[in-house]
Image (tube, rainbow, N blue to C red; front, side, top):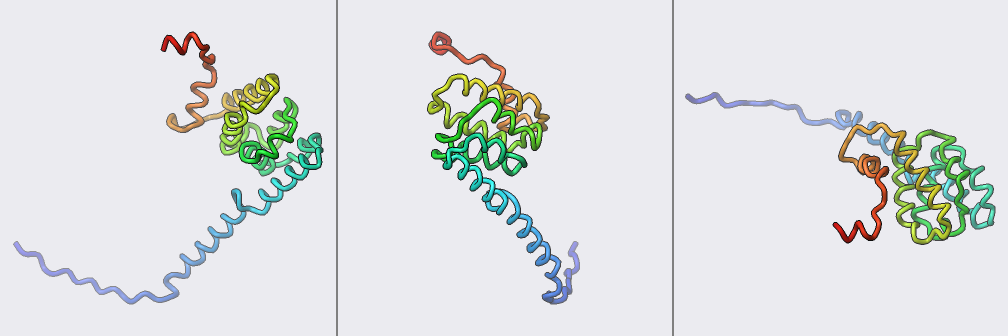
Length: 173
């Protein structure tokens, strides 16, 4: 059995046919410029926090953190700026201040804070500060409602309550 030849007669595309796509692209570009690390508000928040620690006004760092963007900038700088992390005075009050704009922290801010914890672990001289930091992260992880079992945060939640292995346990493994 032979099928008849299929003929499709499509009109030529006009510029006006693409206008809705061009409008959507422009809208997405505006949204992208206002979000993330490239946004002016994020850059300004980073600048304010850096200036505060450079001027040795660590007390004012907690006063600067008033929005979610400020929290994101703080957690970003803590993990990515050696100068910032060495100068900022980490305290229980500062960690608690991170939850004022939003509790629990956003997943991005929490991931950045966890990353900073692992990066700065060996350079934080005060064991009490590390303890506050770890407890804060554990508290934030316990408040999360996660949909995916395979996400990094889900794994952190799963293993955050485990006791650390001591040297004898490692040798037994």
